[in-house]
Image (tube, rainbow, N blue to C red; front, top):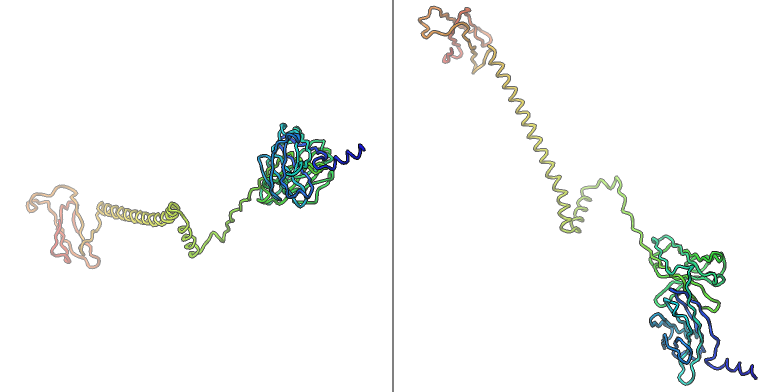
Length: 383
């Protein structure tokens, strides 16, 4: 009779076995609660405390979608008759007794007792930040407590309220997983979970979690992994010898393009770079030409001065309008005041000799002066 009574109590709604879940400070947990399919239309809730004084943490009548209330989220999967509760940012004060229940108005609500134990994992990091360039790879390395060596390990990608929207798990020791975009390797001797993501893109920039899964299906999130993927900058086009020499048409096209798409300051810079060479080159040529003319003129003037000085120092023939004269200097004494009085005057008659227009002078050593008259120049007389 006693055995039959115990069996009867187990069949009464609300009298079910309890479950135990272990979480870690700074992480999160996923708790799954099954219910009878006849309660799919009823509201679901998750409360803390004993049944008589259970305080609601989250309650919703939404079906097949996430409902958030602070650190708690609830998803009622009516097709599987399971609702899932997520608790984030765990702390030691979250340890205690909770209830998963369906709201029934006409009788006592059926519930499942949950014993939640929050621990501090000294072996493990709470958060890791990783970065990689697009097209590269990311290596994830997470430690876990030794008590979970035999459990299934996973890496989940968070999407909104769901901490495990995409999951990749590994069940065997020292064997790479073959499923999912993330390749996982579990070294149970070292309590080290390693993951690799190859050929990353911007879509891999997200929040990931390393964790363990119990035999009852509950998940404990231990280490948060933030992955940031940066775009690789394209290298500038390489310049070649063929591109350095451009045709006039291409030069005009590039110039018009620069003027069309440049700002006013950029336009001034482009114009200045073209105007300065166009002004400086002709200016240098003009200055050089003027300097050359100046030097030539100076050289000619110096040559004429030297030739005139040389002719003035000698008794050379001086041409003048077809007539040739010679300057006769006083070699002895001064000319008398009256040439007719002096008895020492010597005269010389100059005759033109056929041939070159030269003057033939016959004089003595004491000649003082001579009158020169040339047939070709009858009107000119010089002393």
